[in-house]
Image (cartoon, rainbow, N blue to C red):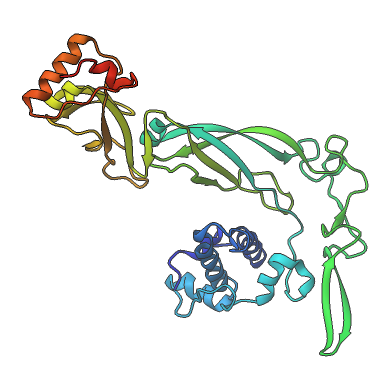
Length: 371
């Protein structure tokens, strides 16, 4: 039994007909096929989900059983060897030349899917954001209402394929006669022809436009995450469905922090006195300031975690931590008085004093007198 509702997996309604289901399957199978996504391990799992969903909805008996009970007893998980017609998967990559398939074809052309990159900030990751994105897409021509014919009239039925969009041929092979289908050469598979093209769109039925699409981005998203907005791509032509919009989220670099999942890392330069004696100070987070306690005797490289100072998980819950790495700042220049104090300090602790640099280097500059 599939882990998800097959209608949701394919993105179709419960009243979708077989042509809609097949079209959705082909589109999603192309998108998630492992060969198309060699560097995305999750694509193979999604591809299997799509195949399992199609094996249910393409079989009237299994579909009816699912609609009645919400489950099937024999839903396959492999899109290659599951139920349904294997020619459907063949058609995904090789078109309809494999033949087969009955019922009325849906005439038209689906709209293109569109990708938009959206740059956001770490503060947006914490709070989420509701915003608009500009989408350059193709929209239905308002002059012909998407028919492509001047005045909005309907296109004429193609006389070659009689509106089927396909022409069939029969070939004799060693296994007998094989019937194959191909797009009609006259109408290009549309099933109709336009003899009086719309002057505004020149018969294309769609025109370029820039539209504002509202998107709601939840807190906790990762850099590179993709938001799927169904139906907000380019408009389809004829009976074709609109494409989808994919918003790729990119988190802008913030020089103060490094992100690892929900945890943020930052650096703090402390003086020798702060590290040795301890201190309390204020440090900036992404959306608020925090009081940080540096314990006495803190060593260089020590990491101090501020609980819940990081980023939230995608589906809600406690925020990650803000981890502060303490670096002890060593002065590059010392006065004679400062150098004497450091020598006295080292003697009090019984430490070996650094030797003077004979070449006049930094040790020579700090400790220019031999004892």
